[in-house]
Length: 125
Image (cartoon, rainbow, N blue to C red; front, side):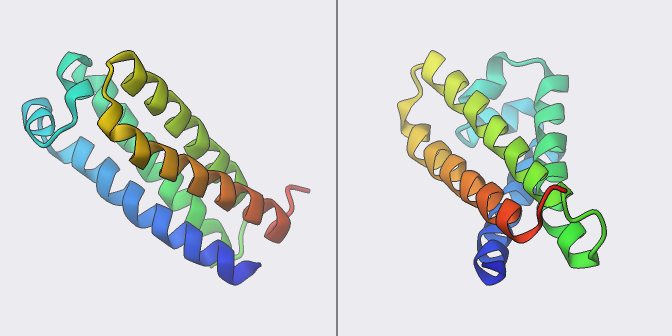
């Protein structure tokens, strides 16, 4: 189980570190040009906040188990990423941006699997 957790967590962490870092570093206009249409109508602070949440979620998946400290935070971070993707799916559906949904659904599923494996591997109690 722990090997499966690390595979899924590493994949998710890579994706969310990149995506979150992109949202923090790039301007709203540059994000829109790269295909993040939702950023065009969003407050710039919200875009940066989403980026920070994604980075914190990625770090929460990796650092607690890696440091063997507060490992119960890993499944909680995965649950947080499930919520991030649920909101993202809602935003994309509201904007009728259906081309992003396969990626969002895949990330939602992977985050759910990471949460499930995390609970089995690193119990919350």
